[in-house]
Figure 1 (cartoon, rainbow over the protein chains, first blue to last red):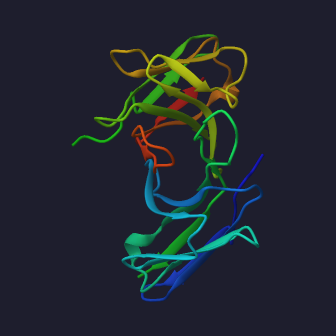
Figure 2 (figure 1 turned 90 degrees about the vertical axis):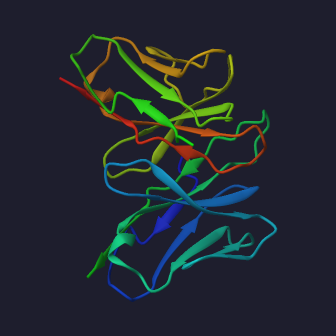
Amino acid sequence: SQQGEEDPQALSIQEGENATMNCSYKTSINNLQWYRQNSGRGLVHLILIRSNEREKHSGRLRVTLDTSKKSSSLLITASRAADTASYFCATPPLTQGGSEKLVFGKGTKLTVNP
Amino acid sequence: NAGVMQNPRHLVRRRGQEARLRCSPMKGHSHVYWYRQLPEEGLKFMVYLQKENIIDESGMPKERFSAEFPKEGPSILRIQQVVRGDSAAYFCASSPDRVFQPQHFGDGTRLSIL
C-alpha cells in the first residue's frame, strides 16, 4: 500500500519562482527522504530528514517534517529549468526484521518554464 | 567512484522467455534493493538483499520472480516465463552497511514484453 502521497500531482511554474511539494505518510518513521527523477533516469537522493528534526536545508532546498500530522514539505527556491523532474518522498517504515525498504509515493511532476 | 550500474538498459523479450537483469552496487555497498516502476507511478519495492542473503522479499511475486546477490559478482533479478504485465522499468539501489542510509539508484532496466 502507498505510504507516501505527494501533493500536488503536477506543478508548473516560471523560472525564478518557488515550488512547494507536500507529502503525507501513514505509519511511524525513522526518517523521510526526498528523491528527484529526471525523465528516463534513476532516482537521485536529495535530502534525508530524521524523525527528531523539524527542518533541514540543502542549497536551494528546504524540507520540513511534522510527525504529529505525518506530513513533510519540500520547497525549492528560485527554481531553474533544470529543476524540471518528478519528485518523490520515501520512507523506511519502522518494522521488525531490519528491512530498510523504501515506500514511495506517486510523485509530483514539476515543470519549470524558462 | 562509479555509481550503481545496471545492465542492460533496455531489454526486449517475447512472452514465455526469461529476463535477467543485473545490478552492480556502488563500491563498498553491501545492501541491494530492487524496485519496479510502472509509467507515471512511483517505485514499488520488490526485494532487499545483502551478500548471499535475502532480507526482505515481501514485494516480490511468489511465482516466476527470483533474486540473488552472490558473494562475487552482481545482483541478479530473474523473471521466468515473462508476461505482458511484467513490462516496466526495474531499478536497483544500493546502500552502505549502516542503518537508515540514503539509497543510491541505477538508471534502471526498461523491460518490454512483446
